[in-house]
Every structure is written in C-alpha cells, then in structure tokens.
Length: 320
Image (cartoon, rainbow, N blue to C red; front, side, top):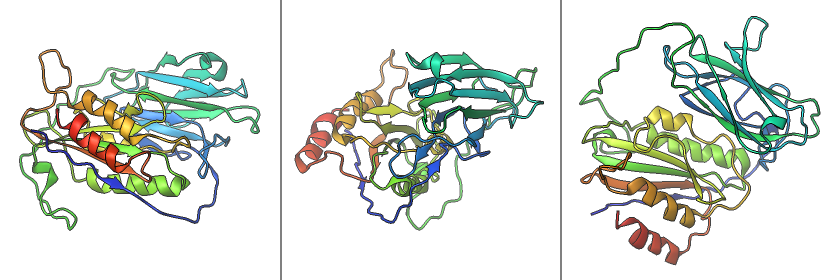
C-alpha cells in the first residue's frame, strides 16, 4: 500500500533587479560527478545573455575520480564563434592544457559528446564568443566516473553509520532513520526570477541536508528530477534511488524556465518511471515495504486544480 505525500509550496516575492548572471558564478567550484552547464541568463526573464567572465571549476569531489566526457547542445547559435573550452586544471592559464572544446557550429544540429580527461579531480570550464550582442543559448552535462590521467590508488568506500546524533526544530524524528523512497521534484517555472528560484532551492536544501541514502533495506533513498515544459515533462537529475543528499544539492537548478510547466502531466510521467515495483529486469526497483513519497517544490500551481490533484493521488500514484 503506497503512502504518498504531495507538498506544494507557493511563494510570493517581489522587488527584483534584473542582471546578467553566469549559470555557475565566475571562478566558483561546482562539486559532483554530474555537473550541469548552461549559458549566462537574465535573472528576471531567464533569457540568454553574454558575459565574458563566465568560467568555473568542476570538481568531482573525490581525489581519485577524474572527468570522462562532456555533452553539449547549442539550441540557439546566433554567434557561430561561440565555444566552450575545457582545461586540465583550475584556470585557463598558459600552463593548463586544453583537453577539449565544443563550438556552436559543432552542435546546432544535435548534442555533441567529447571525451575528457584530467590529472586531478578538477577541470576548468570557460565559454567565450566574439559578439556580445548575439548571445548563444546552450546547455549540457559534465560526467566524472574515470580514473585520473596518471595512475592512482583506489579509495576504499566508507561504511554508512547505523546511528547518528539528530536534533532539528523542523523535524521531530530523524528522516535518515525512516525506510523511505523519496522523490523530490522542483518546478523551475517562476515569474520571480532568481529570487523565486533561490527560495525554492533553499527550501529543498533544508530538507535534503537532513537525509542520507543507502542501497540496503532501510533508511531513505533519494530520487530527484526537475520539471520541464516539454514531454515527458521531467528530467531526472541522477540515477534513480542512487543519489546522495550531496548529489541532489549539486544538481539544484541554477536557472529557471519561462514557459509554463504542467505539474500534473509531469507527475503522470515521472511516478511510473520511479515507482514501478521491483522485478528481476528492473535496474532501479523500489522497495516493496518502504514508504514512498513525492514532494514537489514549486512557486506556482502549474495547471493543478482540485480535480487534477485528486486524479494524480488516487489513479496514478496509489497503484505503485
């Protein structure tokens, strides 16, 4: 019997000054083995803009794990000189080797995947183009699951402790101790620009930082997806039920969307994908006796009515 929870958080905020912002702040360190990349954007309208200082460090978070590949898609290539360049190191200085690059002309007709390597856990990612008045629009993913360019010693996995100290005014019981499959969804559609999106991310962070995951028969396992305007109306941000709390936090959206997102349609697609019960051939089964919940963080209803909410709860979720 499924126990499900659907929480809709509505945020009303005002007073926004629009600026052009890098998707990842200049010279920031973004940690994780699955790192999103995208163009600079107007933080009020999320329309693409150009800044000549957008470069950041991608760090796998583990000293022995290097970078494997980058997949990039230019959806708008107004300036064909636009290029993403990847450096082995933490900056674009002359002592750091260029390991790969993807240009606007390379990937306008489809996503381009290029191999990467790194001698440490860090690479530097920089975007540039010649005409600042014709900003290109692009997005992609960096994957780190390889060894380093030089031989290294494999780090032994750590053992998850069975107990821990817990005290938090928001939660009377430690969520980490619950046998639970928890799917977290974020709807990045907001009319409030970065102010609204940051509020959603902060709320998500307050919950996720209290959680941990395990592949065993108890405790919380995490799934995370963002909602999109296009079919199937969601994008999984990591392996189903194999994400840690840090994986979720590193995958929180850094830019929103301007098109309307249907929360109802997204739930109809994402729930069967995540919550089908285990079979021998299912690579990401749920646990038969775990509590299963869906939490949606959103700044708007996105097409939900009272009838639609009832249909989702009873018809599309309960059978899993």
